[in-house]
Image 1 (cartoon, helix red, strand yellow):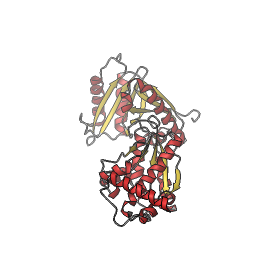
Image 2: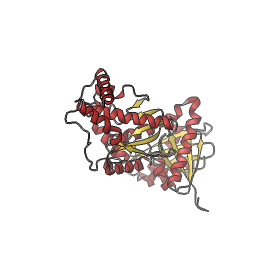
Image 3: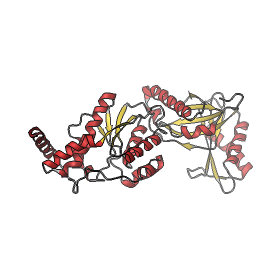
Image 4: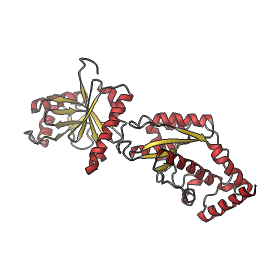
Length: 380
């Protein structure tokens, strides 16, 4: 930190982590580690520690800290705060300053929300709200709105040593800290869906191992660019892409399907080949599941009967976090996390795509075709 620089404070709030009971300490330690990793990745120095039910970040570069911290999974929001004495006059004065900074006036409504973590403070929360609110109205002629529709919320948190006052709340993604729920292998293509699926598993606390079966240099470049975007959310876990050949994994089985007249099954056997490649990586790297970007009914291979066939006999759990989402929802999320533009760059069609892929496969037919493929291979 800069010598002699004024230290600022950022208040971090977590949500789901607070419900973890006896395991809460483990989740909080990982959350603090990830917050430190976010700051370090952006060259921001900061001291991160838990105070009561909040996490405090002390830094001399508050504004620079807000952006990376706002992408730390496990946090639901954060605020730059001012520390003042535990005295009602000082609290009201700072509330007025924060309200003015937020633009509160006759045409900008506000409310005050106070919280006492130290119950020995002589004023209860509604009294703090009222006294501070009256001071703001007198100073700014601001319009009071106690509902969630208020333009500005001025927050006050009274602790043992000081009162914290803020007028800005920066949203964060929520979820669980990356690294608390084990490892998964995510099959990443250059399309829209798979990076979003990987992001959603990161939000559930998973360390993601990206696996790409390359079809072209252009497609691989898209995947690597999207992994760079995902790294902005993966603080505490390094994304290390694994790239294998799509043609080597799929080509032989596609040729054999053509030889027995079952080209319509190519997409399903292709996905099974990709899953089997992912299982090998998962076993090597001690991952617990495979992530796919499937959404029910979106394309031919993602009908429910076909998903049953694709999943049959795969030795690791297959996780499909997009399964109940429609394309509009997936696109909106891709835009929000920053992968959409890269994913929609031009790409060549799959070289193995059949003209009329099967949409309603069955496990019995899969077993029969697999048997015929084995017989065909044995005869050559």
